[in-house]
Amino acid sequence: MANHRIYTMTFASVYPHYVNKAERKDRTKEEVDEIITWLTGYSQEEMEAQIEKEVTFETFFAEAPRMNDSRSLIKGVICGVRVEDIEEPLMQEIRYLDKLIDELAKGKKMEKILRE
Image (cartoon, rainbow, N blue to C red; front, side, top):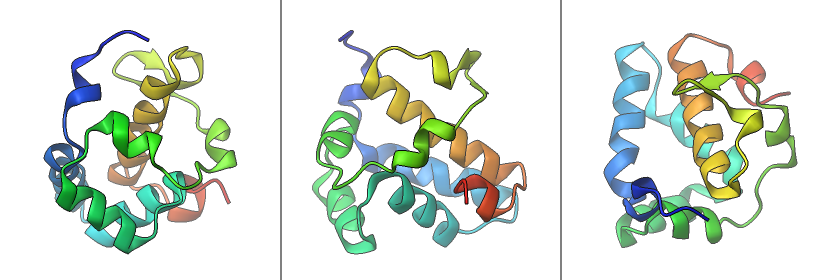
C-alpha cells in the first residue's frame, strides 16, 4: 500500500471540512454524520469517540465496525479518478466517503446517497 499523506491525517482534522462543505449548500451536520455512520457502521457515539481520539484515516477505517456492503454501488469521479477503479482498498474507502459528501453538497436526496 502506498503511503499517501491522507492516511496519516487525523479524521478529526478533515471532518469539519465535510461539515462545512455540506452546510455551505444548506445541508446539515446530521446528514454528514448519517452518511459516515451508514458507510462505516460506527454509531454516532463511536464516531465522536474516534474524532475525540484524533485517530488517523487509516485507523478510522481499520476500526470501522462494519463497512456497508452497498458501498460498492458508489460510482463516479472524485478528484479526477473513478472511485470504482481505485485499487488501494483504504484510498477507495476514503474516496467513497468523499464522493458521498460531494453528492450531499450537490443536493442529492439522502435515499439516493445511501443507495436505498
